[in-house]
Length: 130
Image 1 (tube, helix red, strand yellow):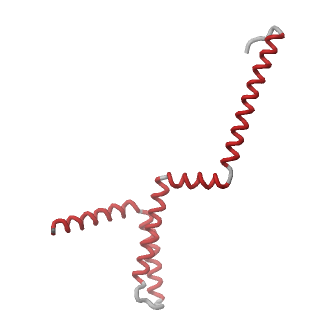
Image 2 (cartoon, rainbow, N blue to C red):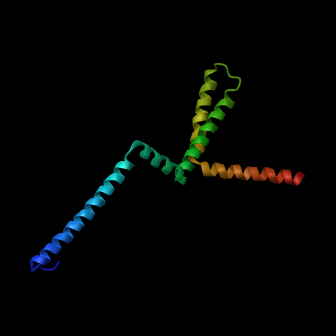
Image 3 (cartoon, rainbow, N blue to C red):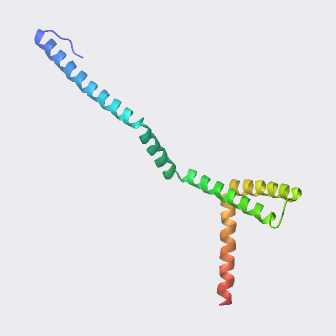
């Protein structure tokens, strides 16, 4: 900043500072309004849902976990077919469900690759038989 040597320069400097202060004040008010709006519960929920839907890693993790839970549940139902109160069979079904769920949810890409390979292999056999 330059040295002020006259009353006119002082008045001009004060005027410039007042303008700067008004601009800064308006920017601060605008930022406060933006922050206030973003902290409303509906906007927090909206931004969270948006983050979830746009995150490919989260969607893959949810899909892998859901697949693991489904295959674990189905494996339990397969083991328990016709079982009426046999405690050993129920225990085996629970252990099998836990194991299948864990393996599938931790290795969804491997399971997907194996499934694609099997599916393609079956399609080749059907095409060659036609």
